[in-house]
Image 1 (cartoon, protein in one colour):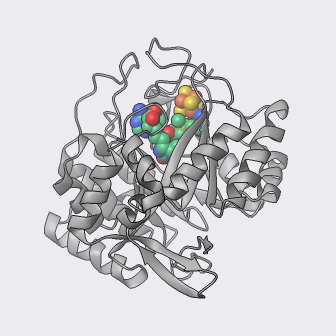
Image 2 (cartoon, protein in one colour; image 1 turned 45 degrees about the horizontal axis):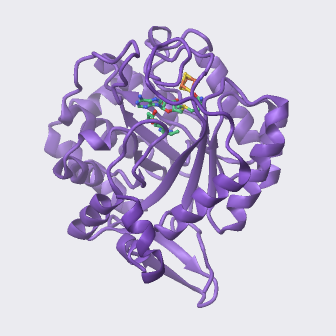
Image 3 (cartoon, rainbow, N blue to C red; image 1 turned 30 degrees about the horizontal axis):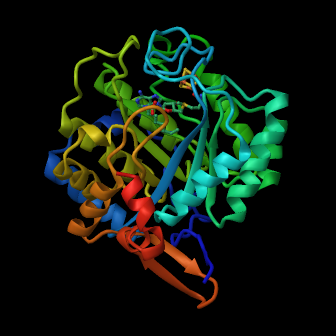
Length: 360
Ligand code: SAM
Ligand code: DTB
Ligand code: SF4
């Protein structure tokens, strides 16, 4: 049986009836709502556009690790900081496809490939294009995050079949220079423009918990929501404090402030998938459940992010079971019907049993 992965939610009309002129004051008004009112509003908006018991699952793979020339202060992969990650050259296409196959068998529907580059070089392009084609052939949705893209590179990726390009704004324009100095906020917007013009879906979000102020979180979300169209996918990352980076000792963000970010993002970008992204390993089940209640409907699934840990797959399977969450509906071409899959059905399938146990 072939199951082709198509998101159940129609995102072609992503721009209908959507507000694109958010001011920071308006966003702060949402942040300042009593917590219960904010959660109720977010859940109400969520249910207007999504099945509240479905979560999209993506698996991440670092296809080129470390030795990055950029100076992003949160990142273990910058060559400027002394971190203990293993540097790796661009992976072989075959190895990437093996990892993608494994992710599919584990129940993932999208495969995201990330590279520690400022931007891809011309010599890298043939390999990444092969990766996109191969992953697509496996019936998975494809996503890449390779740094800045030129117009031409964006077109090449789109022609190869890339569905999503991830490029985060990371933080507010006001806080930006405290975090990254080697590329500008405008450079990021330009890449997003190139991705959009080439016809790919945009995945763009940011990181919270980097010591930013409340206004910075509001300003970041306003920047994202005022993009026209809004990004289809909005990853909200909780900073993973990586040893050796300048942000390794920053104060923890209050858990409720993180949940508020998810809820405000959900309200402002009602038709986008909001991803509860990096940082889940530091969150207990109750906190993650609260994020789903606030409107998060996408996660990274698999025990590794790029260089940092992610929850073990069996923990995620157990959490989805407890909460009655299905992975986002997929379309079964043979039976011509939509099927909502439970993660454990995919992962505990007899022939995948070894994968499940190896992943622990
Ligand atoms: N090198 C490319 C770039 O920066 O555009 C692609 C990979 S980069 C690691 C992708 C995103 O991961 C960053 O923009 C950032 O938002 C997120 N990220 C990286 N390190 C992180 C950390 N320690 N905690 C949370 N998010 C992180
Ligand atoms: C995103 O917003 N988060 C992912 C993905 N896009 C590429 C990356 C998270 C990285 C967490 C730190 C690490 O693994 O090194
Ligand atoms: Fe390099 Fe991306 Fe890390 Fe910045 S976030 S240092 S560009 S890998």
